[in-house]
Amino acid sequence: MFDFKRYDFKRMNYSLVVLVLILVCIGIYLIQLVEPDDAKKQILGLILGFIAMCFVALVDYHYVCRFIWLIYLFNIVLLLLVFVPGIGKTQFDTRRWINLIVFDLQPAETCKIMMIIVFAQFFTDRKEKMDRLSTVFISGIMVILPIVLILIQPALSSSMVMVFIYIIMIYAAGLSYKIIVPFLAIGLPTVLGLYWYIQQPYQKLLKRYQLGRILSFKFPDQYPDLVWQQKISVEYIGSGQLYGKLFSGQSLELKSKSLPVSESDFIFSVLGEQFGFIGCCVVIGLLVILIFKCLAVARTAKDHMGMLIATGISAMFMFQVFANIGVATFILPNTGLPLPFVSYGLSSLVSYMVGIGFILNISLQRNNIRG
Image (cartoon, rainbow, N blue to C red; front, side, top):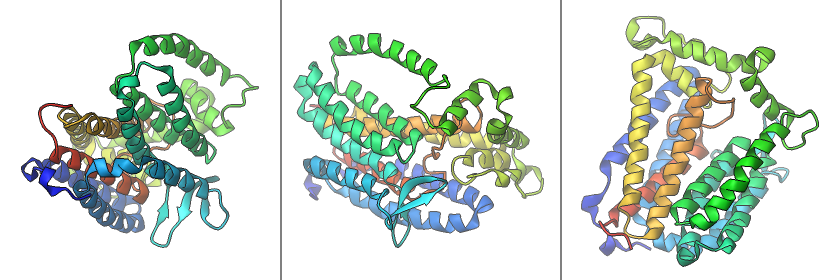
């Protein structure tokens, strides 16, 4: 479990830890501006997350991956508990949280990390069978179950993250092009067909509000009541101009405070208004560096399993950064995904820091040759 003889502590990625702490501190500051009470909770999340990150960084990931079926079962149980009266918590007409004593746990967030570990071990075990349809079939069943449980909460955006992580990991695992090409030939027309279908009045796949988000993005003038949040978000980001209100001598009373969930889904609006274009570029740059550092660890991982874990975590960060900023700047349909390490959310913050803990653990054992 703690095999320190295998660790080279000279390789500890301290710069990655500093980068994460800088992003979290920026996030806490922004949250403080719009929701002071949530900022205090986010500090608790930072403390819990930092402890979890340090612990995971020292526990050999090979040891953790021995228990993938227990992890998978535990993951499914957590996703089911949100529907149990007295345990699950309803908020905004959704059931996404488990009521704990310290904070509300959102299993859809912890699910991402657990499934990354599960698939890293599964694809490693089937490394020589990546040219078989059975690998795709079994892994597909494994990922569909948690996705369905997340969809019925409902949490469409989190399920999309899971799909993206799965696709990136199975490709990185060495999926044969004999399978990829036929799947693309069938999949692309299917996706186009589904896109047409969900716009029909008789479609049954999406809830009304989910369909409204897609249609309002495509036809914003026809759905002004559904796009006002994103339009105002763009205005608030632009109002920060080059330096933001903090450095321009303007009033520190932020208009973006009035945006719903400005502490989470629209934290980028608060960032743009307070720190301006330069501040947005700095935070985006820090997040890009973080993702590239994770990918660098994947490239130099000592084995296939370590590479897959680091790749899955990189994919998770990549999708959520693009989606969150894309929604806030109105280049994507409105969806609820936090900006990693910056947005409010204890479950997400602790999960992200656990992910960084795995990255640190892999970097401690990395070498220049991956077997």
